[in-house]
Each structure stands twice: as structure tokens, then as C-alpha cells.
Amino acid sequence: MIMVEHLTKRYGPHTVVDNISFHCEPGTVTGFLGPNGAGKSTTMRMICGLTPPTDGSATVAGRPYRQLPNPGREIGVLLDASAQHSGRTGRETLTLAATTMGVDRSRVAEVLDLVGLNAVAARRRVGAYSLGMRQRLGLALALLGDPRVLILDEPANGLDPEGIYWMRGLLRDFADRGGTVLLSSHLLREVEAVADRLLVVGGGRIVAQGGRDELLADTGTLVRARDSLALRLTLQRAALDATADTNGGFVVHADPGVVGQAAADAGVVLTELRPAAGGGLEQLFLTLTAGATTKEAVK
Ligand SMILES: Nc1ncnc2c1ncn2[C@@H]1O[C@H](COP(=O)(O)OP(=O)(O)OP(=O)(O)O)[C@@H](O)[C@H]1O
Image (cartoon, rainbow, N blue to C red; front, top):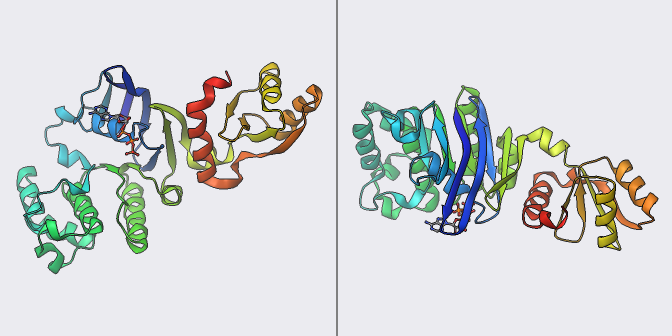
């Protein structure tokens, strides 16, 4: 279980994570999405005790990461696959970590097998690994202590399609056995395939969170008009909650019939009126995160 309450990070005058709260429950995979610079890595680093928060708190298994007696046994972390010592072999890297964590050495062979690094790969120095192999090793390290929680920042980076498919199965299986997964990724199709909950951030704030199916089903109505300003005023007058997209349109939290009626009553000519969910997660992502930077214009 991961609990994040009012987590905030400021660097000088810049608030890069702004009062974020969410929970990740056992048995679920939460996909953490947002454009570059939205604050995903900073949030994950704060959960893992690597960056001190300016405000708020994050706990894993009921405690802040730094207060966990043996963190690797509770939470597996993969934040940067390139962070490993390049002069050690894969097996040495894992054996050293097993010793530090007090994990039986037999677990090293188990996790190597689990992540698909064979005996030849395990004997090679990490410096000679491809990015995909580093990701597999990073995942092996995260799984080494048999934790109940995984926090993974872009774990699919560098994996080939077969590797991505394999990782999807591994994470799904981990969650189905009662584990908790928080994973950030730019690969929206992958997130859509594996995550049962979504957490979308933009500009350091949460712009949407909830069940994947519920979020994809309830994305409102996309509406455009020749006169975008007139449409904006119409939506405001009708007290319809709307978010601007990047092309002068709006996503409105109401049925198309309600939006169309409001426009007709005001004599506004529409050029597009449709449910916003048609484009799946990609459309939802673009709509929500574009809105994060422009929604002030609508309010
Ligand atoms: N140590 C730091 N000092 C100052 N600013 C920082 C620091 N670390 C991160 N930032 C800023 O915080 C913001 C959020 O960065 P973060 O890496 O958390 O975003 P992200 O959502 O993970 O992006 P990406 O998808 O590109 O990895 C960025 O504007 C970044 O420049």
C-alpha cells in the first residue's frame, strides 16, 4: 500500500509537485502518466526517500520509506536503470544487494531467471549491457527482496516489443498475487493494457485519477465552434465545467445533448460535437494534460 498525502516539492520559486494525494492499493497496477516535466519522477523520488518533500507525506506499508527497517523487503524500486556500477557483472550486482538486504543467495538465480537474464548475460559486466538488459537487471534488483510494493519509473524504456509484453505479464501477475505497483511510462498503450488505475499529472498537479475503465468511459464531450470565445462564454453561462484543449475546443463534463442544447440556445454554430473518449487513453492523456496548462483560461 502506498499512501501519498498533500505531497509538495518546491525548488526556489518553482512548485514542481503541487499538493498531490493518492493511494495505491494491494492487487492493483497504477499507471502514472504526465507530459515531460510534470513531476512524476520527483513524486516517485519523494516516495522512496531520495528527495525530501517541502510539504506533505508519503508512506509505504504504513511508514515513510526512510523509517522502513529493511526497505528492499517491503518495496522494490527501479528509478534509473543506468544507476548500476558498470564494472560489476549482473550476478555480482545482485549478490551484493542480496547480502546487504539479508536475502538468501539462492534468490539471485531465481530473479535472474524471472527477468530473463541467462547465465551468459549474468556473467557480463553491466557496462556492456544494452538498455533493455539494464532494465531487466533493475527489475531483478527491485524483485530481489520479494517486496509487496513496486515503484518503477519508465521500466519499459529500451525493452523490445517482446520484452514489453513480458513485463506486462510480470507486473499483472505481481498485482494479481496481491502486490501493489506504481509505474510511470510514456508508452500509453502499455499502460492501458496493464494498469487498472490511472493517475494523470500535469504541471505538478493531479488532473485525473481513478479506475482506467471509469476514466476512459467518462471523458465528457468534445466540442468546437467557429467562434471559440462565444462557445467559452456559452459554457460558462450554462455553468458547464469545461477544459480547453490545444485546438480551440473544449472537453465538457456533460452529455453531448446538454452541450449541443446550450450552444443552440445561444446561437453558437458548432463544428464538432462528440464523446471525448473515442481516442482511448491517448486522447484522454492529450486532452487532460493540455487542459492542465490552459484550464485557467476557461475558469
Ligand atoms: N533537483 C532539481 N532542481 C530543480 N528543479 C528540478 C530538480 N529536479 C527536478 N526539477 C524540475 O522539476 C520538474 C519536474 O521534473 P520531473 O523529473 O519530476 O518530471 P517528470 O514528470 O518525471 O518528467 P519526464 O517525463 O520528462 O521524466 C521539471 O521542471 C524539472 O526541471
